Length: 281
Image 1 (cartoon, rainbow, N blue to C red):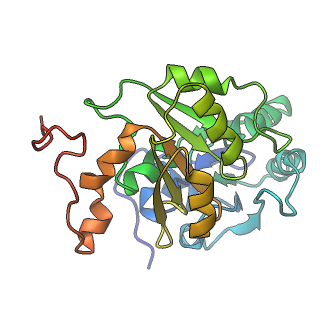
Image 2 (tube, rainbow, N blue to C red):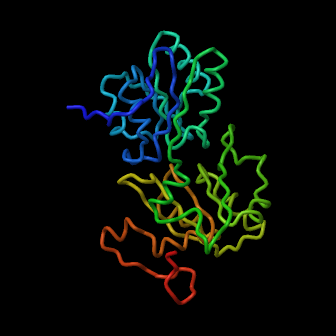
Image 3 (cartoon, helix red, strand yellow):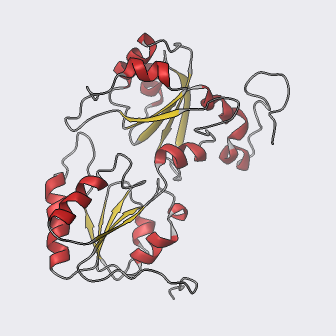
């Protein structure tokens, strides 16, 4: 039996429309109610590689079309995906484009929306929880903490060609942001770490690597900027991964809530080394 959403003026997914929707970082419970509403109305769901099967279970009435892109593996071309959305909408389908995380955070949702609008297809954007925030939170790493940082920078580890983005000034980023969150950076982490160190970051600076964030397969590696390449190789980690550089990673010593659920002790009530518990207010 399908449980209905509480009474509300929920938007209707009309034939000929495409809703671009963020599915969150992995855990189905991190979907928004607007996303769930869309899943229950769609005729077709076109989904990415990071969308969990349990999320698709909420759309049993819909056709499910896989359009995932993974680095180094055969993948659908972005233009083909965008034009397929156009064709489905023009065929009168109620189309849900389901993307991992948030569609506008390194998700190419903006490109798909541009193509749809250029072809006269109406769209609705449904934001989602980005892995760079939600995935790190599940690892016990806050991207901001009053005693640690007043800035955070989100970057991608590769560009359209698959290489480290040439448009990014890694050394300036190293100097200008206290915490750096890197999406899709595992392949080029050796070069990225080298650039950050050359920009003034310490080789001993804490780094957190979170793979398959928020799922049952989540793994967290605590390492340093100087040893991250070797430690990733030794741990046998594989993408998808979120990498966080900065002192915020040390907060995991007290904020690893998933570990504490499993009975692990708090490692340090004051990871900043002030000799007293961190303030709660």
